Structures are given as structure tokens and as C-alpha cells.
Length: 115
Image 1: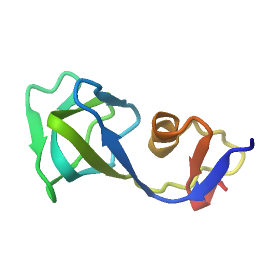
Image 2 (image 1 turned 90 degrees about the vertical axis):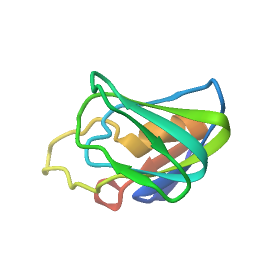
Image 3 (image 1 turned 180 degrees about the horizontal axis):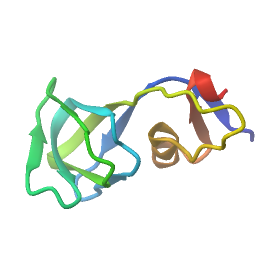
């Protein structure tokens, strides 16, 4: 079966209790609580963040981000910035492509600039 290609700059991911989600390359992304309660930790940052439904956090660090559900399952919306690659320059998989592997291994996400 071939992969499904979606042109999007956002994704929703369900986070199960005791199964944290690790995000790399999240600099510039906005994380938003859609359901449940989420605990967000940025590697080497002394401050942790708790997101309730409707609350959001902009990631201004290039360090890995760990997102955990507190007290039950939760849903996270990730809005990643869309940046066009320079002509002839390869790009590494973006944040949303990484999330696709968590949600469904056969799902491939790309921004309109990379399609």
C-alpha cells in the first residue's frame, strides 16, 4: 500500500498516559491542548508547562520536546511553521512528518512547499 500524502501545516496527535511523545525539530511550532491535560518539557529547560484545553505554547528552542498526558488520554494539536527549502537543497523530515510515523507508519505529511 502506498503512503497517503497530506498537504498541511498542522496535525492532531492523541497522547496516551505513560506513553510520552518526543518531538524533535519543533522550533517555531505551536502546541495546543485539544483534550485532556498535557505536560510539556523542553530538554534542558528548567520550566515545565501544563496545557489545558485551549491553551497553547510556542516552542522557541531547537531542543527535543517531551509531551505527556496527565491523568488520562489527551490530544495535542501541533501547528508547524511552513518554510520553503532553498532550491537544490535537501531538507530533513519536518516535525509533522515525524508525527506521521507516530500516528500511522504509512502516513506521510508534507507542506505545500515540499510537495
